[in-house]
Length: 363
Image (cartoon, rainbow, N blue to C red; front, side):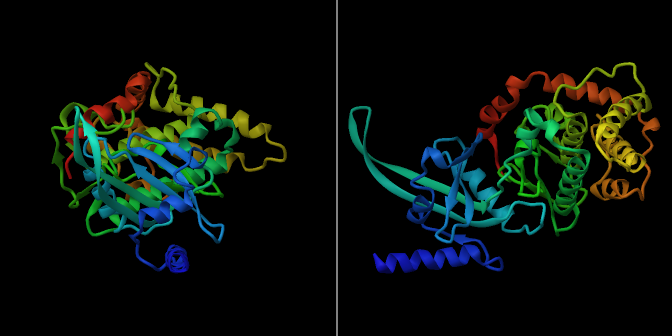
């Protein structure tokens, strides 16, 4: 027992070490820190499995993602996520700390016969983000986010995506960027998570995929309809998230017949009234310029024509005011908001797509 304790102390010291590379961890260790994967430790549940809070002896907490082994292609998703997370190190990407993959044979009854069946456990250890996902704030707590917080979240997601697309040797396309996959730390700084569907892509390369895997409403139209995958696929998802953060909800109002300038002015008026109500507020003009830039960025990111969407470099420049976006040239911009609203109104199909098509997923 003493030797086992020393072993686990060593594992905890490795998890504490920010310079240590993620490594394999024993299943028993993960069972102990999650109280045997108890319901009280559940942080969240997604299409691939459950996420638990692991508590180390030091009191530090980590997130333990346990994939559902019976899910079709669970192993492919698991291996894909590990492969890509191993390559990443950025303040706006979730921290990868370790993994576990253990297989054992169980003697079980199958159709009246006793057979040995193989059972696998696949788990990922990630940095613990105490504020949960952005999804929760858009669902019922959006009013809690002031403009500065929303802007910080937009900046962080853009910076994280810029790192994935343009700051590493091969681009990594996330392909399932949505509020549920953006986690928030104690300061509400965003971290992009869940790389099970992500793909490596040479710069400027285009992939044609017969399989559509992701979440309706955040998937680019060219991917949904034609199976075309480019870095601009993630840009569309980013645009939807930006629009949700600005508008504060998922129910896009109809903007049919409204110019992009008219739509922008309408949202600016709403925000001006909100900001003016804040006690002691004095930065109205500065913040309205930020809001205007973010609306323009959101609109051009959801352009139905993927060739007209900006790169992450252009988006960063626009956020910083170094590049001016001309929405007047894009009459499609506001119609694209209608298109997204129409797709997202069918909320019940969002997760169905993942379950029905994940069996076709291949790296």
